[in-house]
Length: 494
Image 1 (cartoon, rainbow, N blue to C red):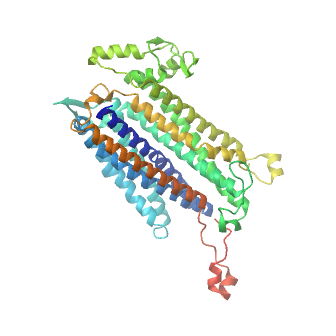
Image 2: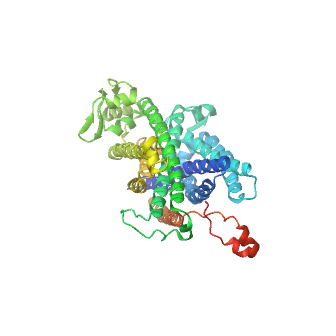
Image 3: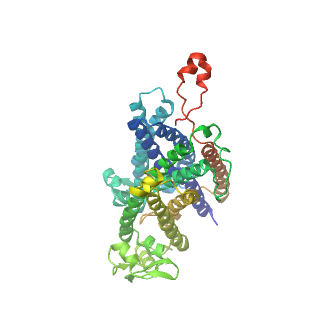
């Protein structure tokens, strides 16, 4: 093992840690803004309670995302100076736009939202969270546009061994970027939706006094003073958040599938080696099949996904290797086949499972019609306890799916850092040795592990504590007799 291998491990480890927080921040911010919008339009207190509850979870995650993202920038100069030299003139514009425009917008208005409760007018305060959300999505746009350029470089020329951008618009509207950006952002909504489903499912079980195993537990063990709130009203509140997450996850799943289909067609044209590695296809094949798992193949499916033609030819790894060796010179142009193969299946399988769960949940919690609704005394179907448990247990699935997608995307591009232009072996810093990278890799891994543990503890603690209820309205009779006692009256509102 040399410095190049450890530098790749370090960037992969730190990026995976960072990727635990970024998708959740993008999707959860939109969800919180939607809850606050519902409160602003309806005036219903349970929307305000949910906004503040999930808003705290959003802020915890946002802070961790910022901390873990800073290290990414330092690595470009420390471990990948040759890469930075080559791409710097191209990446300067989109990354500057991300820092000076998107992140500035996001952080400034998020600060106004945090400290603006009861200080800003309701409309201005609502606009602040939406501005912060727009900033976070713009940030994702510029970063993903830069990443897409590495896979399909456009709008540049090579001068003196460096890529010089000559068309910013071409970089920002790269066909790969236009497919990748909505795909990743929609997948982030699936991640956030899965998180909200798990939290809502857990709170529903706690309100009913039921644990994950189905056994009865003390209903007031973690709810404290909230026990004064009628059980049905509390579970209805969590049903609201669960239904919102179900809708968001199902709709985002449709976008993920559509943009994933478009990405598959682009891979056939722009990165055929990645497409072949994802299937483990060794030779150019007409009507290439797709293996669900080794030994279980659907004939013609890979050709259908890649070209919308079940008889189309898909290039194979060995044949692409031979052509690349003739075009770019002798080298191994094959990525890590097992990692790419299984990452592709984990991404699809876990992603489909999450979206399938959301569709099932929408059916289970649909509005009741006619006689069934009259018998139950409610127009809506309560959330079954078994489904709430399934939502909690499914929490890791969307995160595992999006991380597997990142591994597929980045490892599948190897051995290129910039497709067709710059090899990974030529991108590493020449002055950095094995010892230096090993030390920094160890430090970052331990530090990031502690940060991930700290976030998990904070999130779990907040979820278990439950939401803070707004102050109770003052009882006029108590206020006349004892003003202090009136403030202590338990609330039955959200």
